[in-house]
Image 1 (cartoon, one colour):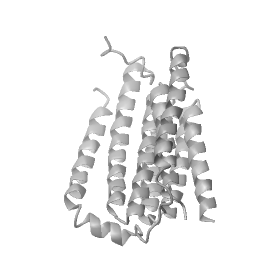
Image 2 (cartoon, chains in turn cyan, red):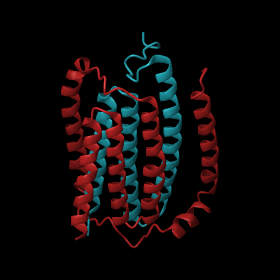
Image 3 (cartoon, each protein chain N blue to C red):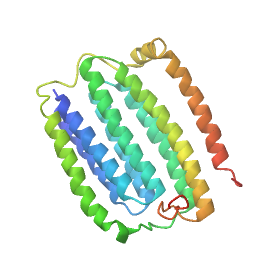
Image 4 (cartoon, rainbow over the protein chains, first blue to last red):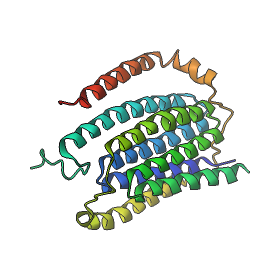
Length: 100
Length: 162
């Protein structure tokens, strides 16, 4: 049988990859993709614990995470389109009107 | 056998996640993310969460990622314009710190020894649905509101004269 901690370590590694991408990439779409990686890592951890404890609640939570991810992708990509239309670039460093 | 499948899916997941980060063009990144999602679905099946595995492929890889690819192709982006020079020291610091954090998490998690990840719980559609429509009915109904708001927000944001 597969031990629980293998899943947890895999989830942590995926989360860290997503986090590195979020901090190091400059393209807005890359940032959204990194957020998706992090969400999937968390989903994996949720399902691992749900399966370990014999409770379905963790899997229900993954369901809700999916819903939020769908909403986030829709709004985020609409913002990306608006940003590209106004600034002709997707680089987050160029959108610095609010930066002092 | 099961362990072999776990390592296969884990290797595919980690490899495609790294590939998402190192690709220069976001289109290739998002295609690689689809591979990551299918690997995660495989891991869900190993944990007997069949419903979520199917939903992950249909909703994530089938709907959300198609939206991503659609937007990328709509915008017709040039290949990457990373501000590399400003970020070099950030990479030099960030990657070792990330690895250090992973090491710390792994060291802590590794103490949970000898606990099998699978019990007799099966995430069938019946089990999920029964829980969703009794214990989690209010959150489930609220998600419809959330999706409605996200839909309206997306329409407003993507309008021509914002």
